[in-house]
Length: 198
Image (cartoon, rainbow, N blue to C red; front, top):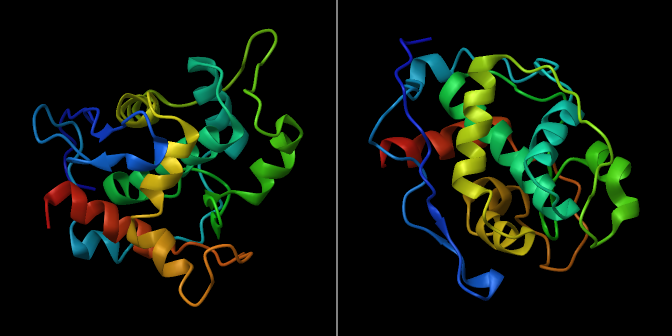
């Protein structure tokens, strides 16, 4: 991978009072950079079949350590962590795939674990444990700084306007069940294109 410099994803998702009126002004800051987006040649070398560096539950726990949140919001934050890791670092962060469900990208295994919360905020009692390398925590911090202030509904609306989810849902009605896996290659190329401003 190219030499990494120091960037932070600035808060780029703006939300109005209505969660369905969120929009992106810029997904990545071009200011203080600590990642270098992958070249097309580097992207062609990514092994999307890897199992993932971490358990999806470690990544979910990391986000839950920041704040209580709904299941929907947690799903979308974990999705963005995976997507930006593909685009900026060139490897699979989590041991899960995301499917193009009606309400946006969903990891079925994460949904199964937390479905009992329904629409209620997930509250964790006691300490939350996770073992994540410093360089990956920096990425998670950037995702949190960019998307963390948004509701689950706002993040759902955002993913509905982005190519990876749209592509996986092609041919499906808006309220039709869909279990098509969102393409890791599309995730990597789409978010990379946002990063470089294409």
